[in-house]
Image 1: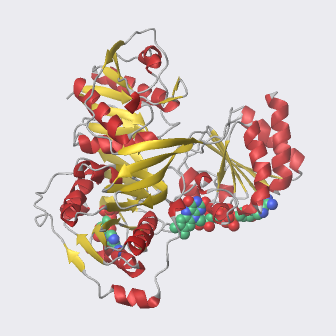
Image 2 (image 1 turned 180 degrees about the vertical axis):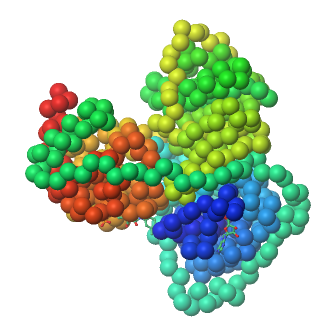
Image 3 (image 1 turned 90 degrees about the horizontal axis):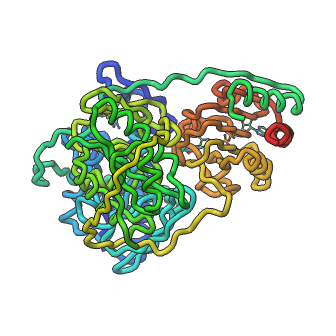
Length: 257
Length: 321
Ligand SMILES: Cc1cc2nc3c(=O)[nH]c(=O)nc-3n(C[C@H](O)[C@H](O)[C@H](O)COP(=O)(O)OP(=O)(O)OC[C@H]3O[C@@H](n4cnc5c(N)ncnc54)[C@H](O)[C@@H]3O)c2cc1C
Ligand SMILES: Nc1ncnc2c1ncn2[C@@H]1O[C@H](COP(=O)(O)O)[C@@H](O)[C@H]1O
């Protein structure tokens, strides 16, 4: 079976991100290290292990600027067979619903049995992708999956919800977004990192997909820093005294109890 | 397209608090724009009257087994149907697990604009614009929504809930056409009785590497129980297999905004702070006065958590009884 994995490049989780004064929708990128979205690694791992047991090809698709190639290379080094990159500004600088629509068009000709993506993009903090792609492809989706088993024509997935989980059975093809409980992503070996550079990364444009430019449905107007948290009271000493201070603070100042 | 639609969520016979919060935002929009607000109730339709009394002019209901448990396909079809009924231009829902999933699929179905986990609405801007955290809360994005309709999920615990009015809503039963359902719920697995999820709780007590092992979470759970709080954890504790991943708070765990977050034996790494930095109040218990969490907490206790947390629990029992 063919499995598609959606890839995104994001700033490293350690990164201190600051708005770019000359481009208030964007961030300063000089000192920022970029990585493959951590949840996408679970998607890649899952795709690879399914392909290893059922046979078949794993194709990565990434919307991102040319620099995002390094994230694609990470996925190729983990074992993804080949990749496609969509670098049109009309795709890179648009909203998640439009991106999902573009990805759906890119996925269609591959006719995959399964499309996997990460549970969430950690940069924009959005987790809509699986549902959006599924809707545009008129396929079922299961989001936030922590356990997955795939057979030839159906899948069983455990979807994590607030306060519990749902066991869901779906026909294939389907779209699944992957959470951390799913697996332990493999580290690419040096040889595989070298070999990744010889794998195909095909550039795909919006016009290749017969898509015209669409204005974004949502648009960041300005990024700003949230108000910094101020240091509060610091108490030390005997546990009895500090605990009593804390309780007094909770009732008199925070007014929580 | 002019109306406002709130998609309601219920839990065990009650209207979920995020629905009351979405209703609060809807009433504010409705008042300022002089447009009516409707609500859609997909399960537990006996709550239609109570829901309507939050200020809605209409409550849409649907009936049938396919709405018994959350299902993205049947719920999307019903929500799209209701949106068309009231010509919804703005659709609001709580950013719960269900809310985030449903709003995503609905946004694509209606070819609209999506804004998830919103913490502020600029009620008077036209078209409506919103604020949402990005880069794990390290920045805030003000987002314009030129697309239509606008589908917005609201972060729990942020918006003022609507209070019941004397008003009575018209209840309209819809019969949406749900063609095929391909992803079926086989089983709903509830968390153990009395175990609150971190995304649902007003108070969270969290433990990190400082609790030292799985048994160390005992004192954390004891305190959580007294406060009717959920138990959270840092990734260090989760990666050591002391507690399951669903408790992890942070950039690659859950993002939470409780009223009170009590961090015990957690240093406050940037990735952890990303998940809980927007809590209304933070208490930290840490033996290292220089741990990063200590100058971000509203109340920082320097001390051994195994000594402090049990006393804190006892003191709270005294005052709460
Ligand atoms: C890609 C990526 C994603 C990540 N995502 C997350 C995430 O989602 N959530 C998350 O939490 N982390 C995340 N991290 C990890 C993060 O960087 C930190 O490593 C982690 O948060 C540290 O956990 P901690 O504070 O429990 O441990 P530590 O940093 O080791 O801190 C333990 C603290 O406990 C104190 N202590 C020890 N014993 C006691 C005692 N008896 N009494 C009181 N205090 C005591 C110590 O003084 C110390 O401050 C991520 C990292 C990466 C690279
Ligand atoms: N790996 C990278 N190296 C440098 N710049 C990058 C990288 N990835 C993305 N960018 C830039 O970051 C910006 C995208 O950020 P944003 O507009 O905030 O989504 C664009 O200007 C990109 O060119």
